[in-house]
Image (tube, rainbow, N blue to C red; front, top):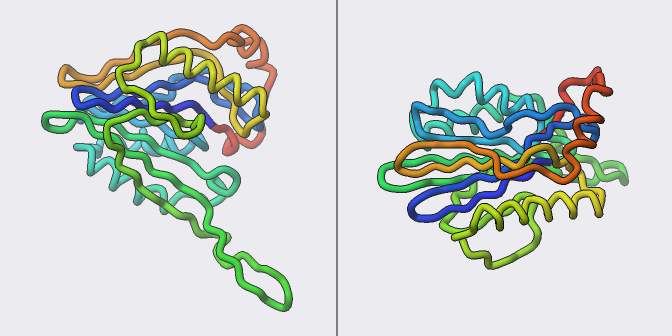
Length: 226
């Protein structure tokens, strides 16, 4: 899954993310994963199947505010094909400016695994069910994927945010994690003045990633992930 780091402070929220989508851990395309909803001063991103983000984009004209967006997303998730969540689940991050400050929440989606014993065999009674949990974030730093529990100061500079993102890629490559990170490193900032997105830098292997893209013609487009 993609990088999606959140830095939440009383005066602003920042979201750091890569730009590589992949198919079966192979680079598929470079594209912006940070989605902006201008009318509600809100951004969201999805770690998981890209079709989830596409559906949210189709619905985002209804995102009047932070709570409405989260409610619509949660209801939409319940109607989505269960196979999108079977392997690694998914995670949605939503940040917005509300009133006098920023808000941030994450929705985590996972397959439920409730087993019972039938004829001496363990049977999954909830193969078609998913669990949807909402986590409201308080000021601090949240890394996805996590590098473990760390007390990190929220006044991180662009250079520090860039180093953290590159370290996350190094760890994913070294340990062959179920993710494919690359392309550019982008940052969205939400504060009283509005929402902006800019590029912090690029991953060291961006040229190799570009060379690999274009050689892939996936037949199973529902398996493209971010």
